[in-house]
Image 1 (cartoon, one colour):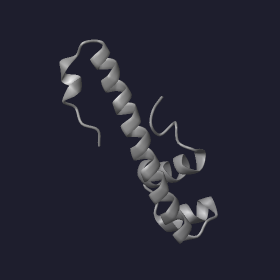
Image 2 (image 1 turned 90 degrees about the horizontal axis):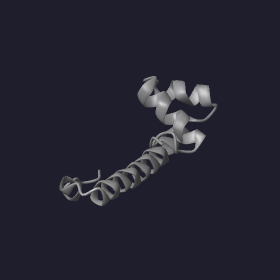
Image 3 (image 1 turned 135 degrees about the horizontal axis):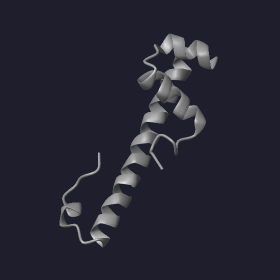
Image 4 (image 1 turned 45 degrees about the vertical axis):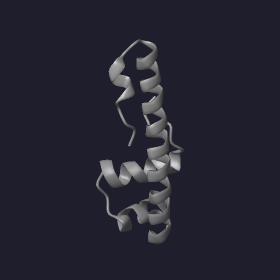
Length: 79
């Protein structure tokens, strides 16, 4: 599972629109039928959710490497 795939659809859409499709806030607002302020808020919440999910996935990967005996797993830091 990727971090972005585990996010709720409304967070995925706004992150993909902003960072994958490189859309402006005004364009996103129009496409999502939201105000620009609502898009900004949703982006902020989506970024926080992404960081949390990504950190959890990193920790799971470190735990799996530790269980496999990989000593480098103890030195890798999460974002």
